[in-house]
Length: 415
Image (cartoon, rainbow, N blue to C red; front, side, top):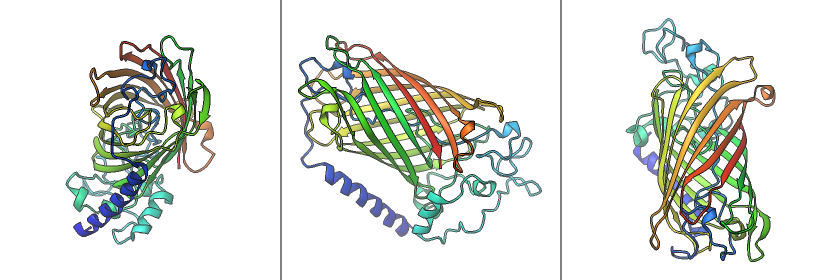
């Protein structure tokens, strides 16, 4: 693909993102008078009539995001499993077709040449088969240098295959980084007692729908919509149930190899929610994330980036910087068992205020969780179903706050 073609796509993406940003930024960026976004909801004084979002960082979407991908390890000779390319069996190098010279990749099926139009690439990325052996044979590594010169911009989305050591490219709650997906999920979050230390109990309930829409191998959109947020707030300090904010993520695949992949992401939060529930926040959140498998059945993920409010809502807070690091262990399980493709993982989240008056406070939490496939739903649709559960526990935060915990359940479907 020519550099001119790449630039045209950058102009298109920039224009879309720019329009969204202009719609949600009615004023010049100013520091709000509300508490710091890095402060836990529990840190809000009893004199504040407005509650912050359930998430300790109000500029971050509610932690969700299980990752898609029904992948199995070739080490178990499961050559027909999604994520395992044809011919990937023990004793044969990944990407090698039996009967051919070592290193010869499988031929891509007809219809996926670089001559496809932009609309054809988008249509095939969203609706085409990605789970058959022929479709998964289209996977090839993407280099960082090829981000501007590679043909992946004109290639339909490819299901992310297993690594060379057999580890699936799965993600977990608050661990989506490093990989592009094609899936949607519903998540329910329960926050226990997020109110100030001496205030009446205030539990929060949040429902979220997330949709991943890949447009090609290098780019996709992720939409996070809080369809219900319920907690105490407003001048009456009673429970209110409203819709929350919409966050649009522009996700760019920088590179993808057998054992490592990385993304750049720009999240645009649109203030569609009510301030009574700690919503109504407009912000920009550029970030870098990676996925890495250091050993068979082990994976490490990380994400880092600032969160900058762009409106004057009383819940906007100050700019903050967010870091996340996660590690997980995979257990394939039996193909005919009740427990399949099980992950146990641990996510560490840290958020620090980087603007506003001092002292600037930080928040740190640990979030253990699990994910597994739901085999009895395998006959529903043409994709795969997964269940997720996690528990986030604050470990350190502002001294005037009290500890609470957050439970998350989610059901995901690879479409």
